[in-house]
Structure formats: C-alpha cells, structure tokens
Image (tube, rainbow, N blue to C red):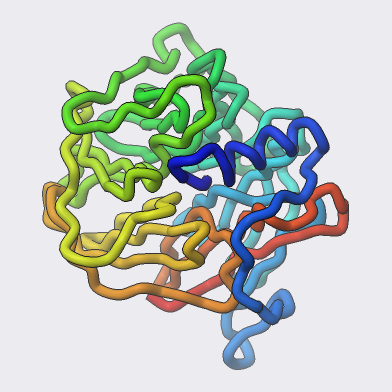
Amino acid sequence: MTGRTEPLGRRRFIGAAAALGGAALAGPPAPAAAARPLGAAASAGARPDTLATPPGFQPEGIAVSARGLAYTGSLIDGSLYRADLATGAGRIITEGRGPASVGLKLDTYGRLLVAGGGSGEIRVVHPGDGRVLATHRAATGATFVNDVVVGCGGAWFTDSFKDVLYFLPAGRELTGPGAAPRTLALGGEWVPVPPGGAHWGANGIERTPDGRALLVVYGAVQSLFRVDPRTGSATRTVLDGGSVADGDGLVVHGRTLYVVRNWSYAVDVFTLSGDGRRARFVRRITDPRFDEPTTAAVHGNRLYVVNARFDADWSDPATASTIVSCPL
C-alpha cells in the first residue's frame, strides 16, 4: 500500500474504509484507462491480459502458484479470491470475516500466508477450500501488517507503522506454540517511522538474489533497504537511476527487481547485484490500465499487476477492479 511522508493515501483510506465501509477517497488522478473486457487477449486462444476481480472486492496483494492460479485478498473484508490465469475464471474461496487481507504469499507447503493489516494478524489459509488453518497475533495497537515474503528460514512480514519485521518459522506445523511469530527490530541505516500510525514505513518485502538477506522498500523516504535477517541491521541499496518513491510491492525474479509504485502508476525495473546492495535501473513500465497498482507477481513471461484503486468509490457495491498482465 501507499507510502508517503504525510499521513495520506493508504493510512487515510484504511481509516475511512473502516468507518464508512470503503468510501471513496481523493487521490492523484489516475491516467485515463479504457477497461478491457475479461478474457481480452491479443489472439484467439491466448491468455487473458486483464482479469476482473469481483464487485465490492478491493484487491491488494497477489500470489501465483506454479500451476498459474492467482490469489488475491480484499482490503474491505478480508475475502480471498482465486483466478485461473489461463482462462480468467475465478471464485471467492474465503468469505470476508472482517480484518483486511493485504499482502499474501504461498509457502513451500502450498499454504497461503496472509498479512492482516490493522488487525495485527497473520493468517494461514488452505489454498483449495479457503479454510483458515491458523491465526497468529503479530502485533497490537497502531500496527499494519502489510506484506510477506517466504525465504531466509521462514516467512517475513513488514509492519508499516512499526520499525520491525515479523518472522514465522518455516515448517509443516504452523498452529503450535513454536509457530508464533517472532519480532525483529530494524536498525542500522533504517529511518524510524514516526509513532502512532500517522505515517507509512516498511512496505513491500523480497529476498536478495543470493537468498541471504531481505529487501524492504520504504517509499516515503524513497529508499530500498537490505536487511540482515539475523540482526535486523539495514543498509540502503545503492540505486543507479530509477526511483522507489511510492514503492509498494516488490518482485525479485532472478536478478531482476520489479518495484510497484502505486501513486506513480508505474513499475520500475532494476538489475540487482547478487547480495542486493546495488540496483541498476533498466526501464519503467507504464500502462493505461494501471489504477493505483500495489503488488505484482511473475508467471511465465508475464508480470501480473494488481490495481487497488484507492480513489474509487468502494461504498458502491458494484465497484470492481482488475489484475493486468504485462510482458516482462
């Protein structure tokens, strides 16, 4: 979600959505975009290049299985939706239970790990029938459990209102006492986020290409940080061109880093050093279909980008959004 120095964007959206059931909020005007119908494709038999999510379902995160099944969660009520990238067909697998579903990833056992936003929850969900297998309380008070990556011994979650990461150990059993999240304080060059939940800090998270450290974007200070998962020590990744301003979701695919820049309506593409200490700008992806894009995932030779549409009128139950497919 959004990360700006002043308390607007996602912070304001979440507060208003909780009070008003998803009312529209003002934001920077989106580029004019002609919506493509579900299933629209370049040629007969090709995969759809725009996938619709259900009315009243505001998507934010995305995870894609090896079979090409995409999962996304709703910021409004926490519902989970699954779609087949080959056909565009999809359905709700978990009905909303209140807390938002923000970032999500599939773990090595095929389970969905879901960041619960302001609830402070981390949920473990069966990807087939949508059953909630476990719910962990990572934090209380002013908190926003935002995004997740699997690697470096388990799953790591960001908190946009606290200078910490939450670690859920890898393992087949995620419901016992040993599965409770642990907290890792961020230090080193990390810029502390002002307390109280009025400003946005850590957002998207990924692994470095060598798998030894984590990458966390802090869009409000326009920086990408490399984090040691043992100590929490953070150092700025040196950017050779490009920008991570408004940085939201991250995708590392080989040595390529994709930074989804929500209010900038763009995805900046970098080539990373193996250890994640340097990133060289390659190009900027823009698309008239981008509408406050938040996260992305790679499948095959395509990048699937989620539109959260923060400035849409989500009090209208007919409001819907899309996942758009772009060539790598």
